[in-house]
Image (cartoon, rainbow, N blue to C red; front, side, top):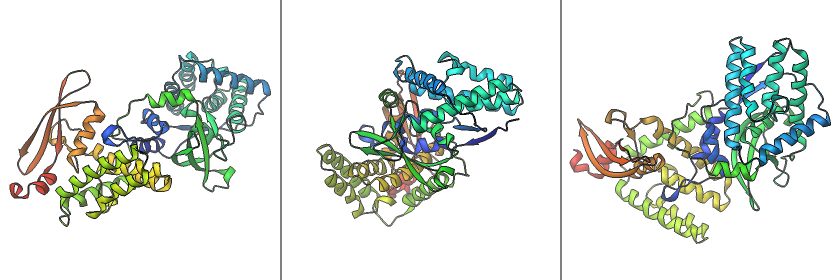
Length: 431
C-alpha cells in the first residue's frame, strides 16, 4: 500500500507576502513584479506536496493529452489562472484533511470538484494526480492508482523537460499558473527557500532558490516565466499589504524579520538622539524628489536623493513603511537585486508589525504606527477616503481617529496609536 506523506513548502504564503510588500502604489511606494502581486491571493492556503512513489513511466499519448489540456487552460479566456490555482490548492488542502480523517472516498470526491475545468483523467496537475494515486491505492483500486501515477509522471516530464530547463534566464520554465511553480518543486522532492523578481531583457522572470536530491541538497536557482494571461491575472489582483499573516515560528527567517522590525520600530520611536520632526520632513521631501528623478530615468540620482535621509539617520534605522518601500524599489531599478531582496524582507517585517498591532476598530485595538504617513498608507490599502482626522486622548495614550468613506460609500472610522509620535512632535504638550 502506498504511503502518503504530507509536507508543506516553507511557509509559502509568507514567501508570497514578502514580495507583495514591495509593490509601490502611487505615493505610498509599493512596487514589485506581477508574481509577488498575485501571490497574496493564496495567503492562508497550504501549498501541499503529497509524496507517493511515482514510478509509472509516462507514455507519449499521456504527455500529449495533458499538454493539450494545459494549453487549453492557458488560452481559455473564461479561466482565470489565479482562480484556478486557488481552487486547486483549496481542493488539495480539503482532500488531505479528509484523508487524515480516514474518509478517502470523500477526499476523492472533493478533488472531483475540479472537473468543472477538466476531467480528473486529463487534469494537468502534478499535485492533483499524485494525491489521487495515493488515495486510490489506499482504497485498493490499483488500476486507478497506477493511471494517476502515470499522469503525475507525465506532468513531471512536462514541467521539467517540455517547458524549459529553468537552469538559465535564457531557458526559463514556462508556467501557466502559480500552482505549477509549486508542482515543479514538488516533482523534484525539493524545498523552496526564496523567490525574487529577476528582470531579464524584456521579461520579468522569477528567480526561485531551492534545494533537493537533484541538486545534492545544495541551494540552486531556477528561473520561471509566466504566461501573458497569468501575468495579466496577477496584475489585476487586489492585495492589502497590511493583512496579518499567520507566521510559522519554525520559519525562523520570517519570524526573525517580524521580530527585527518590531524591535527597530520601538527603538526608533524611543530614541531621542535625533530630531524626529526634522527626519520625517526630510523623508517626505527626499522620497518625493527621488521618485521624480526616477521617473525621469535618473536612478542613480534618485538613490542619492533618498540617501540624504542618512544625514540624520541610516535608512536601515528608519523603519517607516513608505521609506523602506521606496528605497527597495529604487535598489531594484538600479540592478542591486541582493540589496533589494534584503529590503523586501525588512519591509515584510514592517508591514506585518503594523498588521499584527491591531485592527483599528477601537482605540483599544488601535494600529501602531511609526509615522503619520503609515496611517494613510493603511487607509489607501483599504480603499478608504479620509474625511476627517482628530486626535483623542484616553489617559496617557493618544490616538488619531480618522473618519473615512469606504469603497461602497459607507462611513468608517480607524484608530491609530500615536502616543510616542505625539511625544516626539509636541514634547511640551506631552509632559
